[in-house]
Image (tube, rainbow, N blue to C red; front, side):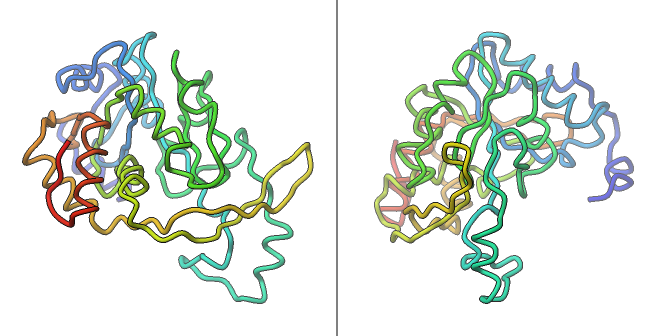
Length: 271
């Protein structure tokens, strides 16, 4: 969506203050731990753009709360798996030899939107060490969430998603659907239904760039919208508006359990 489309489609501009009021009305409270997925354009025209959105989110959770966002960098993966676009096979080894190593300070996010990219560079934000599936967090529990991120099985029990589950975090979707709900990937691991595959990425090890191979599962988000639909019919989800966007706030622990059951049985799950 172009900036002109955003402006023409906005009746009243949003601000840090108005977004904060919307988040409070939705149920975001000081001290909460929240993983956020957001489409900036869906909010309508925001005075201050991504910066104002992040400020409003931080205001809502307060100094005692912790804000988390994905900061994935999918282009630091093995070129044999690239599809958008694919690259010629005779390029693969050059890419494996020369692709810059992951650096949490400089490696940009890919495909996550402006808010996630601004947040991963926010003062005080910490970023996990995974070269492909990192997360960024800011707040008192940030280090607990992103301080340890295992390379293999990147969104499973050794990931920040599992730490959020332990801490009974909330998920906040702003203008996006459950197909963007990264926490549902944790359910894929816990359902135990996905095949494994080999992966690779460039890492810095003792200051030296190395190409490192690791194991993961075949992630598949095809069922995520159906899971989200059934979850919203049966479980507690707070719905509202933040700016011009439809917003959803709910328990990460509840949707992961629900989704794992759904994936194992092929039908509606339980807590």
